[in-house]
Structure formats: structure tokens, C-alpha cells
Amino acid sequence: MIASWKLCFSLMSICSLQCRVVSQKLRLEPLNSTVLQDSDVQFNATIQGDWEVTTWNVGGIQVLTVVNSLDSIIPSSDRFSARFCLNGSKGCVEFTIHNVSRTDAGDIVCTVQGYQPLKAQLYVQERGTVSILGGDVTKMQGEQAEFECLTTAWFPTPTISWTQNDQTVDSSLYNTTSLTDGDSFNSTTILKLTAVSNTRVKCLATLYALATPQSSSVYMVVVPKPTDWTVLIAVVVSFGSCALLVLLIIGIIFCYKRRKEKEPNYQDEMRKVKTQSQLSVINTVEQVTGQVNETYEPENQSNHTNVGLKPGFVKHRHVTIV
Image (cartoon, rainbow, N blue to C red; front, side):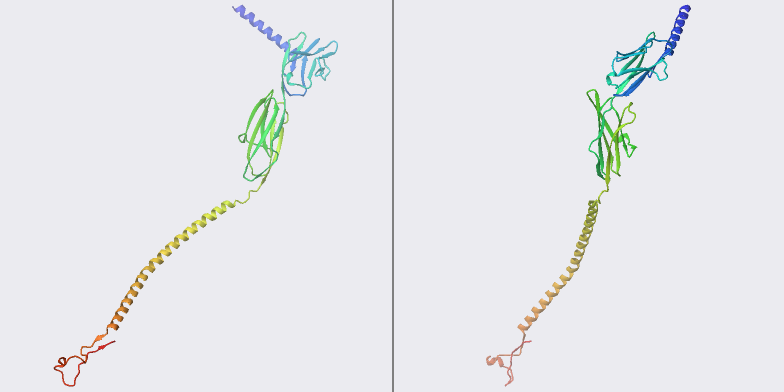
């Protein structure tokens, strides 16, 4: 059992040493590369020691062969080329893919005769268009402005961001939705801002392979908000209504007091008028009725009425009217 373990350990050591030797003899750089469509990409194979033939495979298809002894490079098309590195050493081969397309994405395999193949990974991204719909806008101060940014024909989905006067806008102020369109993506981003002052608004779309974000910008012109006469009118009407109500209440109280003050005087006047009327009636009656003179006697009365009177004396009855 101990002998078996020693044998396994020895084999592992030998394998590890061989792997280190192989990795030292053949190196491929970079192992991962992300580029934009229609650009060029390079991979370098560094070979230590003698070698005869090197081949390059893209997407499972051999596209180029380099024969060291003949200084011959045989490409399958104009899109693929190779050369010895700038130092002139044949120990380094530079492989180039021109006008990269998304069909080139995947494994890039370098095989040197007598060595294990080495593999690198190629990622191809595609940039599309960016535009803010509607163009420049004019808003009154305090109004809310809405900006819609559309990105089309991107792969993969780009990262969208906004700036306001070259200052990054908080992501909570906008939202983004993306939809697939064939083998690419379209995105819509809506930004909402409160109009405070003149502002340059920019929408930016970026990919890992894009050194500088692609952008679109518009200007928001902010005009002063006109005086809100509605509030002033409402205040004036409110105060006017209150003042009118107060005056109305004061008038009612004043009229009520005047009426209370006039009511006793009216009753007094009526009593005076009644008294004067009664007095006038009494005076009239007394004038018409007059006073009865008890000593007056009519002349044609019979003689027996004069019995007991002195001769030559005539008793008269008359009425004196005052």
C-alpha cells in the first residue's frame, strides 16, 4: 500500500513538472479578449524552443497555418493574418482577426506541432445608436420634465446612465426597460427632473469593450414662473368675504339697537297722541254741551209757576255757553 502511494506521488510530480515545462514552452495571450464588432483583435503565441508548424482555429475552423522552416503563412481568407512579433524572433507569432464579427466569438485555439493546444476566449460586442427623443425642451421653473432615451441594436444590453450638467444623476430618478430584437437588444430609459435652472441633460450607453460611452444630449431651458394671481385673488376674496361678513353682523346689531331704542319712543308718542285726542274730545263736548242756568224760566209759562215771587220779578232760565 505504501509503495502504491509512493508511485502515485511520483507520477503526479512528473505530470506537474511536464505541465510546467509545456506551459513555459508555449504561452498564449490574452486568454480572454472582449472587442467591438468590426474591430481587429490580436493573440500572441510565445514558443520556447524549436517548432515547425503552428495552426490557428476560430469557431472550430482552422483559418491560418504558419510553417516556420519556410517562413510561410497560409491564411484561409483576408480576414485572418499572422506575423512574427516585432522583435524579429520566431519564438513569437502574432495572430490577427480583422473586422471581427459576432460569429467569430468563442474559442480561439493555437496548436503548435508537438505541444498541447492552448485555448483563448473571444467575446464580441456590438454598439448601436443612442438618442433622446423630442430634442430640446423649455419648462417653467418648478415644473417636472421627462426625458426618454432610446438605445437600439446593442449586444449585449448596454449600461445606461444620465448626467445633468456633467454631474451623474442618481439612478433612483430614472428606470430602464430592455427588449430583444432578433440577436440584439433595444432599451428605453425615462428620466424625470424638476426644472430649476438651464440644464444640459445627457444619456450615456456603454459596453465593456467601448472605451468611451456613446451619448446623446439635449438642453432644458427654464423660464421664470409667472406670478400666481390665483393665490392673491383667493386671499383678497377671503379677507373681503370676512370683512363683509363682519360689516353685515355690525349692521344687523346696529339696526337691532336702533329699533330697540325707537320702540319705547314710539309707544310714548302713541300715548301722547291718544291723550291729546281724548282731551280734544272732552273740550269739544264741553263746548257743545255748555252750562245750564237754573234760574231761567220761559216767559210763556203759566202763572202758577210764578207763585211766591215778588211782583215785577221775572225768573229767567238760560244757558251760558263757554
